[in-house]
Length: 124
Image 1 (cartoon, rainbow, N blue to C red):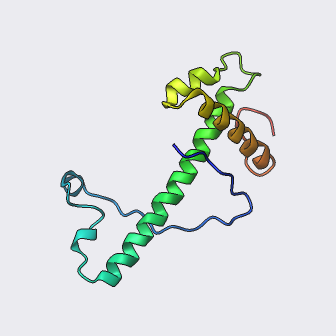
Image 2 (cartoon, rainbow, N blue to C red):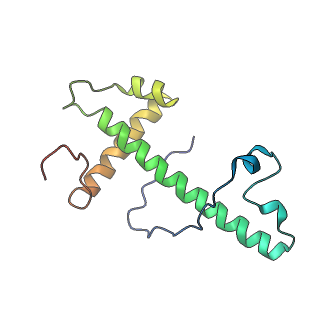
């Protein structure tokens, strides 16, 4: 798994919306967001590129949330804190990667203080 890289100074891209996939369409292995029905290569390239950017943005956001969760689970102030080995096992990571994700999550939490409250249970 690639290591996350913080992108605090870069603006977030607004990806194309991921259109809802009906259950019967999702069951068809040849069906993928209706791309197979686009005949014009220009339109196909445009829509496929939009989807690629949307999936990349979704992946980046999901990794950030994984890192925040890992940092919160490893917080030494928690009585039920987890070790990096425990976090690695839960997330199917290596222990070294879990340590990096905990640190990345701590960086994200430090960077969001004041704009996004990390723990809704804590007083503001």
